[in-house]
Amino acid sequence: MACASVVPPGNPAAGNTLAPIRPGVPACAVEYVLFHEMLHLKHPTRRSGCSLVSHSPEFREEEKRFPAYARARKYLDRMA
Ligand SMILES: [Zn+2]
Image (tube, rainbow, N blue to C red; front, side, top):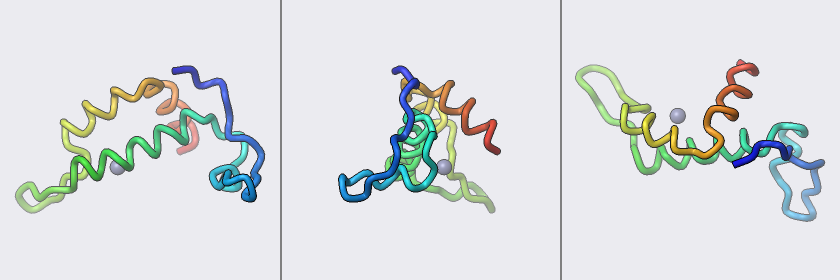
């Protein structure tokens, strides 16, 4: 998956509700965040001893299947 497109300028009337958050963000980064959050529905937080595990090894492995994973992570890591 290419990651050349960016979130276009906001137009809430057209149903574009992501753009007002931060115009110019690569579309793959937005899509990756949505993918990540949806994985939380598939892999709910579980208890492991005294701690909670939100990002299990299975979660992390499946997360890497996102087509533009490396590029999206690189972008988001630079923002941190
Ligand atoms: Zn998470």
